Length: 615
Figure (spheres, one colour):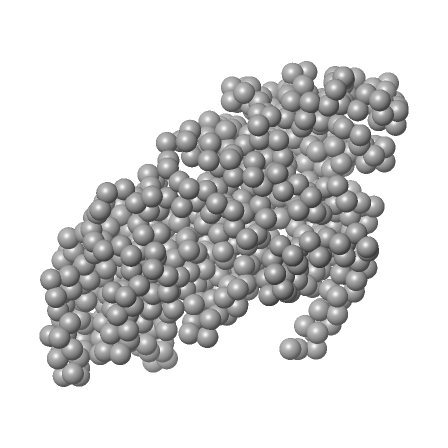
């Protein structure tokens, strides 16, 4: 470990120690009991890495400056809709409530109202604060709730007095950045169909002295939303949609916002994301931000919210909790018994190919498949002897007799395939879990899904592939490469189902009609980026690319091809880079929609881009 890294970790330890208290120690023991020693240690290690990133410094450098805020206050938009901020209040600490109201009062956008449902009518401190602010502004509306009816019904009371075109959700102990509403209205003016808008968020200590654990989000990803309520705060939606879907449902108390987000996004014409930290989630003893285990019922309500969402959209799926609180897994059923064609290119790699085929035969619970080995340019006689031995009615060898071109070879394999689903597989992979093909097929059969990718490991149990991000390393790169197999990643991104821009074709399933619609792999890309290009074509055609970490294989990586170290190979590689830059210039310039613009394009671990002041 470098001296710089050691210093960063020492600083991280000091930050953690400063936060220690009897309460935090008790919380740590609860987490230890939930996860077990090994998993608890991995999560502590991930926390230290996050602390070492020094987000507090990054936030100070990137938040809106006083000069920017002053400029925003003078700005006028063509559309200036009234935004109703809904706040259910119940025995809120006086100081917290005052700070919340101040954070709204300092907004640079002027056309807002706060709609408070006060269910703490016997709390003198709350009443005094609300009366004081009502005297100062007519934009504060209060409806008193004689008895606490729970957060959903209380929020519905606040909704009942709202008159804004849009409604926004704000918890009674949290805060908004001063430019939060300005950024929301900016989107409304730029996007005619902006029915739902959400922003990035972070956590802040109870005394507001330290910002930490930023949640930098991707653009809308339905599969990620089914894995975790990643949208959460700051959530804004058209009031007519919120009313149309019936407001908040009390049977989902604890996850009422998760349920509402599902119902609103199902109806929304457009869903937009503002990649800026505009919401501050305060941590204290009673908040789920600081102690998720304090409200376990909320996670059960979240599970039911996903189940009801699936019913409404007509999808079957079995929802279960993962070992990480607030994260879920949806297991979809396989419909019918469609044939899967496994296409494996090979050149003189008998040992790897034999291991690959053996693992498929021994570790695959789905039985309706064929294997097509695409022989290309082998030179050893024993390779052809091996082919004769392995051919069966379910395995055939076809012969590609031109120069190596990964795209052309796989397209050739597809022409000989009889399956409804195509599974592209490298010859140097080895199956780990028996339900791998079932997991891929169940996703690939879903409406709008065109491609399904897997989680791949090196033989030493470090991650080789956990999805691809466009822009990493210049064109595209694998995420979490070299991290421990147990490493769940930033907000568990390595271990949950989600939509991505691309996945590797080392193990990739494609619905055949989708493959044919985009005309297969681009044969101008003989070696590099053909899978990335293919996935981007799939997305452009309206399909989703799904990363499923429940599909696990070992990948020994490119044994057949060898290194890219000759003059000819380097020239070809540069031409493929040039092709991608020209063909996909827009996404390379604008950024991967499933990767936040605040993340590094150099590192593959969701590190912050830099700590420099914004330009």
